[in-house]
Image (cartoon, rainbow, N blue to C red):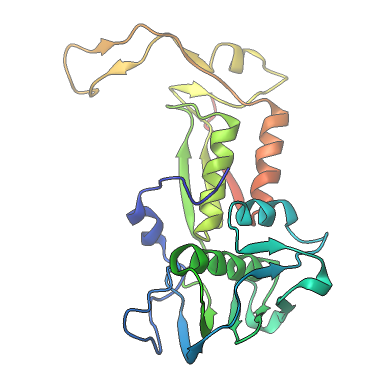
Length: 258
């Protein structure tokens, strides 16, 4: 799966904001394609002499996510440490989600406040490659979020989404640097989470006899006559929470009591 091929409503992505949308210095016609727009961009006077980006991500990093992020990009490779031309260091004084991305003539250097900041820096680099291509400009990018909470909501109670669809949703949240996933798991339209102590919650509550056609205010009400539903096992819920955590996304479950 290539995470840049999925369509999310652009204004939703832009509305939460990662930064304060101010650029200190920028050249004309130099849109780098980074979303959200970085806090500070300072261009050099030449292009980098880099025709392929080689990244060592290490066994302790979010390797599966990064491998997926770079998938399909012929000019970005995951390599051994000695082959890399992308170098990074952690600088906690920058702040947890902050980073400095410095594209130099022959290599790329990243300073990040934590693994979260490193993830955002690499995502920005990927966005540049997808949008701008090569050669990349010599540039220093400094970024930090304006809002601590940057969230998206998914209501699986009214419309059930498969585990793979939820993961795809999380991929795109990560790609645009969102950090909170509001997961609407229960409502009058369906109970979507397995509770082993009370099995009828999912056996009965996870399904509805039929679905309303049109608006609730339309009279008389019309229904499609098709049984609809589904639920996530506890193992699937744990799998999704772990998947989100690997992308530095916090899961906020919404569960109403029956």
